[in-house]
Amino acid sequence: MCGITGWVSWRDDLKKQDTALRAMNQTMECRGPDADGIWVTDHVALCHRRLAIIDIDGGKQPMSSQAGDVVLTYSGEIYNFRELRAELDALGHTFRTRSDTEVVLHAYLEWGDAFVDRLNGMYAFAIWDQRQERLLLVRDRLGIKPLYYYPLDGGVVFGSEPKAILANPKVRAGIDQTGLAELLIFPGPRTTGEGIYRGMRELRPGHVFELTREGGVERRYWQLPSAPHLDTEQETIRTVRDYLDDITARQLISDVPLCSLLSGGVDSSAMTALAAKNLRASTGQTLDSFAVDFVDSDKITSSSTPEDTWWSSLDAPFAREVADHVRCNHTPIVLSNDLLIEYEDIGLHARDLPGWGDFDTSLYLLFKGVRERSTVALSGESADEVFGGYYYFQDPQALHHDGFPWLREGMAFADLMHDSHIAKIKPQEYARQRYLETMAEVPRLEGETGTDARLREVFYMALTHWLPALLHRKDRASMAVGLEVRVPFCDHRLVEYVWNVPWHIKQMGGMEKGLLRHAVADALPESVAWRKKSGYPAARDDRYLKHVRAQLAALLERPTEPVFDILDRVKVAAMLDGTKPVPYIGTAPSPAHSMSYIVSLNKWIKKYGVDIDF
Image (cartoon, rainbow, N blue to C red; front, side, top):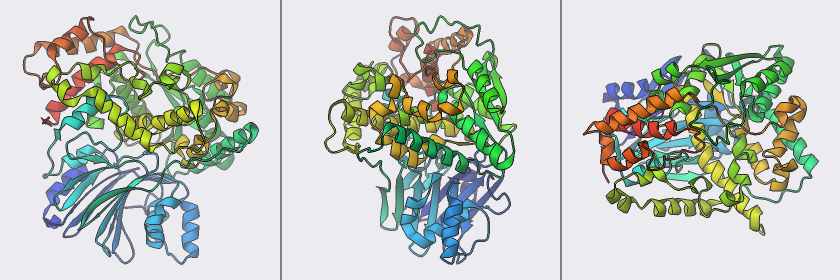
């Protein structure tokens, strides 16, 4: 998978910046524990930390062309690299390794900027082309792999994570009005492209950033194509299944141990079933699977979640049923309340931003347990966004809300700010503007009206806001332990196809993700194929909530904590004593998530030395 960072400066001699470059690269060690490398010339430095997955011995980076005038630092996996390599072989290219990295390099040499259209995979990389004195930053279509950049006067600094950029001596951690608005209005799915830190940009999914001596420009290379869907229901089911079979086979390619993440929901169960069958047929091996669970989860009935519509049933029995059905080796990673508290700051460290409380912590601990036995894991992430699994696809009020459906209940974090800050940021206006920007991007279908047209808009919001947020969380938690997580449902071919499938087929049978269920039903136990959606498991122990409440209460008692330069102490106290509503983060089932977000916001300002300027 790997971590990348780099620096281009027309004004500095980067050969004299060895200390800074090593510091930047060192921040990516967790993403690439197996090897490191730095390529540097007068005005350009490309750095790399490697997690070796394919061609363990040959895929070292940064990687140069045979002429030495094009250099690549690359993170990700190209699942069609074998086909591309065969095509490039036929065109006369000579390869020195078996790696997909070298295929990406030769693809650029052969096809120029158009090479990105040929890639199937998850990736974020930088190419320095000395022939044109040009840097090209590239991010995959759905945003599976992260990439940030920070324009400087006469150059740019970039990295897989903000921490790599913040390690550069020319960059200071700061936040302005826009960053603060994103943190407090959109604590769940933020606006793609916003790096939160002042001056920092996130390269948007499906985009490239080009830098020359004349300056930098970001441009789109991929967008969802809207077209009439002409297949029948049965043809659609068959096509989806064919895609899933092909995608799973492609994503099993690995020179290191591979496993699946199996929660017992239809998404992860389908991926596990297809992977187990394919792996057994191709190699004779039995697939390992893992799931997260909590101590005594079957006995806990938390008074903090009286209406928990997202957590409909325990996962563990269904995961075990699937594992037995598809004959894989299943291991639950069982977490205690004490572990969640011990690692409660891991989300902040992994994200470089306030996070999602024990949602982050438990995912990290799951990946930590998986990494002891495997280096690559397959995930069922993104099926909800692709096939329509969330409540707001079904709830008429949410569906037709004139704004982001997940903000229908308001923006309570923004309401906690000082009134003077609210007057500056204007949360309602800010959210409205971001919504209108999103609506302007929707690839519409000519002649489509009414509910069908609105559903296309809602799917676009899910794919461009919630999906990046969930991929961001998964990437940070997994790469914090050096685990590569692959997301087969994010294959752009599948996404493009399902994007145009009418809603009555997507929800065939009147059930969320009905199309997916019909496509994989033959591979799963009936109880799992038709199981009602259940959200990602969260801590249900009231002791965890009490711990977070105590942290927030202690914060309120201290007179000089920086978070209260932003938030109104009286409003936060009212939230804690129950006289003001607790803010809501996405599908979080407990107020502990929102309370921990405020605590984490304070820790972030202090730990990162964030300069607040608005």
